[in-house]
Image (cartoon, rainbow, N blue to C red; front, side, top):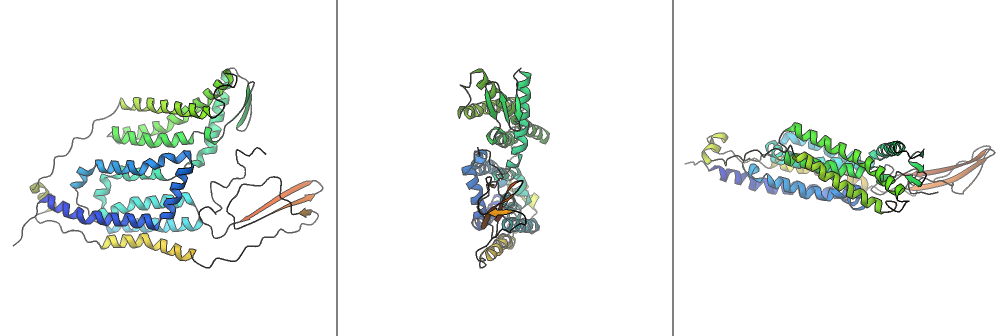
Amino acid sequence: MSAVLPAPLIVNSAWRRALPAMLGVLVLLLVMYRDTFGAMTAIWSRSDTFAHAFLVPPISAWLIWRQRDALSRLVPRPQPLWLLPLAMLAFGWLLADMAGVNSASQLMVTALLVTSVPAVLGWAVARAILFPLGFLFFMVPIGEFLLPLMMEWTADFTVAALLLSGIPVYREGFQFVIPSGNWSVVEACSGVRYLIASFMVGTLFAYLNYRSLRRRLLFCAFALAVPIVANWLRAYMIVMLGHLSGNQLAVGADHLVYGWVFFGVVITVMFAVGSRWAEADWPAAAPASASSAGAGLGQAPPALAPLWPVTLAALVLALPHVANWQWARQTPPGPVALSMPELRGMSSNGDAPALLPSFKGAAAEAVRSYAAADGVVGVHLAYYRQQRYGAKLVSSDNLLLRSDDRV
């Protein structure tokens, strides 16, 4: 004798197996890749540009919680086909981690986090929470490569606006001089932090207030353009405040405060403009009855999905990390000895050159100055081996010249 189970019982039974499996995969991912996640959180802590990333995981969790009614009407099913992109991302993480490229490894591990959802719960469930999953990519601290370009734009606009205001300007690179004093465009003036924060909150605003894809994309583009222009105006107004006040206002740390206040006003205006075209939520779907659910699922209740794809997903996540661990535990090489050659026609000594690049974490370093009749050349050699976090060549901390180096 057989009986057809009511639909709510079928769904609940499926979720009772799927949720612990998903939780187990997430815990494994966080534990096995804890160094990469730890490197991300360390950047959030020390950089004002990415401090907003602390809000991303709780916001994403809240967005998923908002979809709980829709998710309860879905039957989670592991999909083994998603193991292939999962394996490719895991291998990509391995290569990035061995090469010591933080941004690539952090992108890969975030993509692993997102891709594990359709692999374990199925595409139907992942599609229902596609935006909250995509929102997790705002955790990745990337975007500082825009600094030189945005600093250049800010300097160009500020100088042009000052000239239009009748103030003479002499400019050299990011430094410029006006009759009342000297000004410079540094990293904090680039507007990158405003741009990233505005794009994050603008994307969230578009998702919560619009239903059509076209309006969402338009507002996201608006959220990218507004902070760029607003930062140009902010820089110009700060210079004008200092000039008109005899360098009594907006010349110290207070000009950063003025900048954030101005940015807050701009974001408020941006939201006020965007809310004028807000769309109502989709009407809530009626709860599925047992008969309608049974018709959609077939005459008999669906068999609960096996857990072997989940086990394979766990193995896919673990194997690259095990391979990386095996590589890292190899016997480290002995001390590195670097020597500088003697050059014909030039005298040399062990004195450090007057100007040295700011490179950190090298396995070995050597410096030497070579002198000839027409001048002196300084050589700095840094050798990186067994690279790891905090000791690698490709790093945003390694610079030829720091902006705060007065020498």
